[in-house]
Length: 431
Image 1 (tube, rainbow, N blue to C red):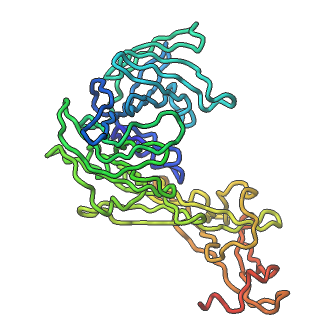
Image 2: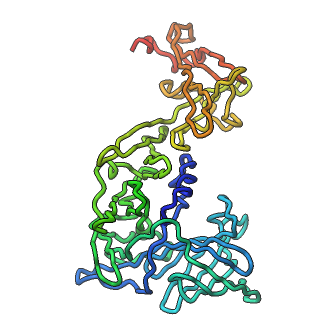
């Protein structure tokens, strides 16, 4: 995920995402200062290399149509996306661009990765003289019979990143798509007009490719800070190293440990909240939110997934519901709500829910919520929990789960005595 600009309105939109944010990659980008073409080269006698990196946004036209363009450079490869304005969320990343950069400019192949058939087919070719500042060139159809002028201007969203970036790695990235051993990035060097101003030590090793810097205003002071993923943990639990920019000294310092300990952090500048989606196991996902308190961040709220029991006709189902981060708060988009006339569900079609009769009962319950006013969190009214009743089963008397099921606007409790393995010789309620 690249975050090349600090823009509160965009960031607020990004906070509407629920679980899956890092799986889809963030679309909030931060522009970095332009610098002249400089190929990757040996950094020192220890056989390490310096890999140029930047990430930039443009707005402009192809022919007479308005477009938004976002590109990143890693070594001599440039890749990204563009869309025809207004850029709907389902089309923002659909038109993919990838190509090479040299002293004469860039040549990029275009693909429609959202196409129903032949998504790898080249749908156009871009040729631009430069990607520093403004960019002009041509778009050509695959057969070369149709060409359109390309005219782009830098998109300035907030303060730009103040320095040029080079990654110090043990080798250049393999761009063949073979997913060989990725380069190990041991440092980030920051340059100002060709002069090294700071070297940030790190230990970043991707799985299929090297991780690249990300930019976010992590302390909400209006200046872009720097982040780099360290390893590919069990998604979405990706550890990051973070450095905070001090505008007075114009240098970066290590973020406090509380922030460093947050995996896959996201940032909401409107509400000044840091939040993360996490996974504790195959069957537990959650969201935790934090705020700055003094010189570190502290947890302010957390919620995890559970199994919400529903009746689909006579079929007992268990819907796995996961919290998400909304407009300044954590909520369950799929839930049971209390209305003036009874209960209602936001679950959608229950047929997609598990029909297993043996879920972990400690994770089975129904939270009932009162919807909040626009911009406010819903309120938990009550929780309908599993209780245990002494019941005759084919294996004798046992304590069986009395499960609350949501059933078309009401709660319908059913004692699950048909499977003695779900029951217990002792009363779990007394443990």
